[in-house]
Length: 156
Image 1 (cartoon, rainbow, N blue to C red):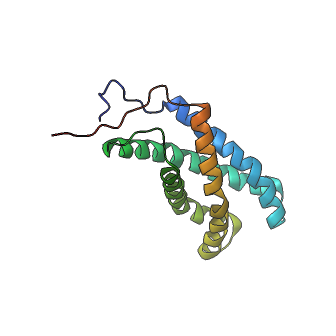
Image 2: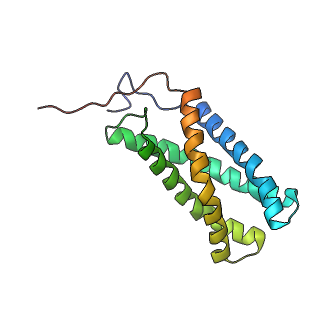
Image 3: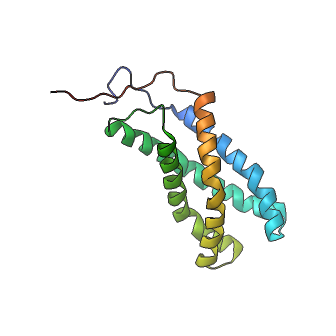
């Protein structure tokens, strides 16, 4: 299975951008008010950090999803439908990658240690995989791929 196959389809760049922007908007709507309340900080301060993290997450999300889809194709797996197990793996790998970028920024922005920022992010991670799982599932329903890539088995 290669990009030259006539039934091959990856999500387009505009579709991936829509995916990322909608997801980050959802997270901002949930976490800015919660963070302002939890840290007793103005929503503008928490929002500034959240927007910076959101931009990092969108760029990471875009590149990660391309790599994930290409990996599936290289392993001769279909892009859709995706099992619950694969969706969980997708969400957990993404959140782990995001930690690498977010922990240092959170530590600097909130003037806390890397360990404290990691603990804060782990709390965030306790919730976001569930949101990510549900969001991606619904996104695939609302914006399905036009062509499903069949699994090919090698014979002979």
